[in-house]
Amino acid sequence: MAKLFIFGIGGTGARVVKSLTFLLASGVNIKASEIIPIFIDPHGANEDLKRANFLLDCYQKIYDKIEFKNNQFFKTKITKLSELIPTISKAENETNDEPIQKLHSKDFIFTLKDTKNKKFKDFIGYNEQGLGQSNKDFINLLFSEKNLESDMDKGFKGNPNIGSVVLNQFVESPHFRYFAQNFEENDRIFIISSIFGGTGAAGFPLLLKNIRNAKHPIKNCAFLQNAKIGAITILPYFGVEGSDKKDIDEGTFYSKSRAALAYYLNNICGNNSLNVLYYLCDTIKKAYPNDPGEGGQKNDAHIIETIAARMIIDFMQFTNDQILSEDGKAINPIYKEFSTYDFKDEKPMILKNFCDETRTLLSKSLMNYFYFYLYLTFQFKNSIEKQPWSSRGEIKFDANFLNPSEMQDTILEKLNGFNSHYWDWLVEMARNKRSFQPFDLGFTQHDIHKVDLFKLTNGFDEKKFITGLPGKKHFAYFDHLLNKAERKIGDIPQSQKFMSIFYLAAAEFVSKKFNFKEN
Image (cartoon, rainbow, N blue to C red):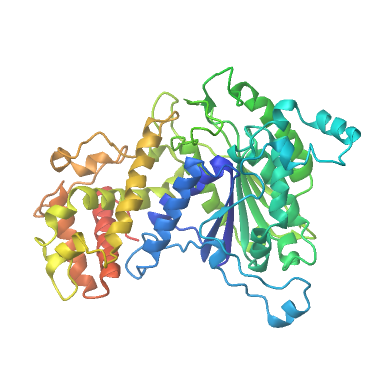
C-alpha cells in the first residue's frame, strides 16, 4: 500500500484530521501503509489545531506500543513528515542540484515564517524604502486598509487575497522540499480546506497548483506532477454571531463560496487538476462566538468533519487505474457529494442514517471503540486484580499497571489522554447543529452500572441473548469476554496483550449483540 500525505489547511483542516484520527483509532480501514498529516495554518494559537496535534501525538505513542495480530484499534500508522527517511537513490541525489536535507520539526504543523507580531503591510514591505508611490498605489487597489492592518499570526480572517500572498512561502519551505523528497510514485495526496474562509480558500488552489507544476530542482517532481490527488472543499456548515467590532462576517460566507467555486470551475475542475474532488455542506448551522483569533478558535466537533474524514477513506478505495494522471492532468476526474438516508432535519443523525456503504464501513468499528471506552473509563478499576484476565499467567495487569511509577510508561496513561478527547468529540457532535448522536450519552458515572449497555447505541436493535451468560446487559458480560480473550492470547508483551484482549472482547461484545459479522 502507498503512503497518504494529508494537508489540513486552516481550522477546518485540523478538525477533519481530528475526526479521522478517532475513526482510525476505532479500527476503520483506510488502505494506506501510513498517513502523514501536515497542518498549514498561520494561527499557531488555534485551539483546534493544538487539539489535533495533541491527538496525533497520543495516537503515535499508542501505535508504537502495540501489535495488530489480534487487534484492530490504532492499526494505521501515522507519521510526522520529519520522521520519514527519503528514498532517493545516491545516484539520483548526485545529479540533483539540491541535496537531501533532514527536516527538524517536533510536530505535524508547518510554521509560517515572518508572521509573528506582524501586520500584513509589514509582511509585504509596504513601508520599506524604495517601494515607490506607484507600487503603493497598486497595492492599495488590491488590499483595503483593513487588510493591510491585519495581524498575520491570527490567521487571514476570511480574506483569501491575503492568504494567497502569505501561504505562497510554503512551496519554498523546507517542509515542501522534504515532502517532495519523500514522495514516491504511487503515494497519494489529499487536501482538506473550507471554501468560505481565508486560509483554506487561499491555500487549497495554491498548494494544488504548485504540486502539479513541480519542476527541477524539486526532487521527485515528475511523481508530484502526476500524483493521485484528492481534495474536499467544505462549504459553509457553521455560522458566527454578529458583531460590529469583528472582522468575520457570516453574511459574506456564501458570496465568498460562490466566488471561489467560480474560480475552481476554471482553474481546478476546468483544467483537470484533481483526480477526485468532494463537495460537502449543510443547511443547518450553529452560530459560534465571533472569534477571529484572539480567543483561540475552539469550535465544537461537527458531523460534517466526520463525513469529510470518511471522504478521505473513500479516496483510498480507488485503485490506481481508476485515478490516473498524465502530463500534470487527471484523466477522467471524479466529483462526489454525500447524501444521507431516511433522515429528517429536526432529529439528530445516527449511524443508521448513513447509506449502506458508509454505515457498513463505520458502524462496527465505532461501536467497538465506544464499548472499549466505556469499560476502560467506568469498569476497569473495579475489575483489575479481581478477574482472571488481569491476573492469570506471567503477564499481569495489577496495581502497578493501574498506578505506574514515574519510571514506568504504560499504555494506559496514553489511552486515558486520548480518550478524554474522544469523549469530548462525541459530546460536541451530539450538542452541535446538526446534531450527530450515534450513542446515548445521557448516563452519569454513578448510574452507568445500572444502564443496559446495549441500549446506548442509537438505532440498533439488539439480538436476544442466549441463556446462561453472566451479566447479560452489563460489564460482567464484558469481563466474561475478556477472560475468554485472555485464554486465547496467552502471554505476550504487556501493552500488546492489553490491546489484543480488549479488542477481541469489544468486537465479540458488539458482534454477538448486534448481528455483526466477526472481523
